[in-house]
Image (cartoon, rainbow, N blue to C red):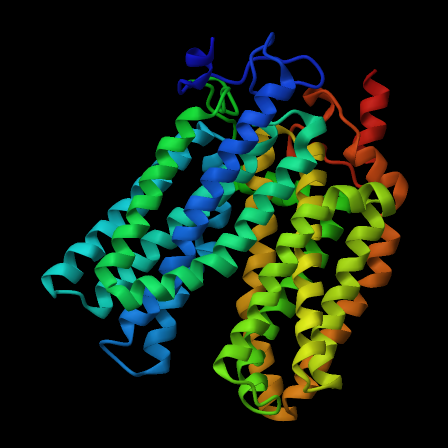
Length: 462
């Protein structure tokens, strides 16, 4: 039984009784399957995000060997994130058609090939800027496929009652490994040698591929040979329609877009603020950035108790205030400790928001739409980060650093009223209550327009 459950499968997930993971064959204990799959997903996320964090440091540092141009060096970092703007929507269609575990294997194979090619050119001394750009694009596209597939796979692998816990651990692994440990380890590995950094990254991707063999269940969103109706553009439109016309999903996506723009502005402005008005040393600046990762880890560990104590709505609302505080702190003081404390609160709130918004989407959106929904949501939110960074630079150039931080603090506060109007206790209760997959929105055109649209349709069908 265990062996058969872990084997790759191309068919759709078998029907499971309420409380079971949708991809789990009936008869398997849901708690045992969910625990096993959560462990596998957290381990996979940790390995691949650690490797991604290393490459985000290693590739730009390699570029400095060939040029001192800020534009050319920053272009290497841009290649790692640009695919989110150019390919996310089409990747969402891909994820909603093919087996999601196999897509994760393919994505890691592409990552491994790109890293191996760069390692080969590094060992032979033939690395060029063009090779770094091509490698960055390949890694960036693979990241879009991997993250979209992994997020869409979670509700198929985890029982509904265990989603919040699984999302907390996965989000915590993403934050700690990608934003904290990855860059730190990447710096150490590059110091030991570029070939060492690239070799270790490749080993992490290979290990991640092997870990996926331990996932129990089937992860194809539709039956083999069942071709979806409509063109690619029509299927993309279905995902966008669902995101826009479901009020709760729309509000969380728009709020996250503003919050991500604030984060992009913070990361763009803080180096100048730290080395200028704050007068921080390199070690102090590293501590300031570390407070973000520490806050994220605390958020992952406490999201469940906080949701039970305060309620999901208040916890998500706290992130709006936390982001506003993170942006306002440099306006009010140049002292390291208040700014670091606000960064800790911001990092913690970011994970709290991520876990809750993912859980809401996974409960509301049908399995066959999860890829397109996640791709559309991430297109707006992650795409807002470079836009926020660009706007921050313009504002700082014209009006000064403090004024730029103040603008973003105000933007975070502007979301408060729309959030409180759309994210109501009733809407959240209907969204997070378990439903049989048949009662969820199956296509983008069936998404409810009100906060409880899906719930009202579900009750009418019963």
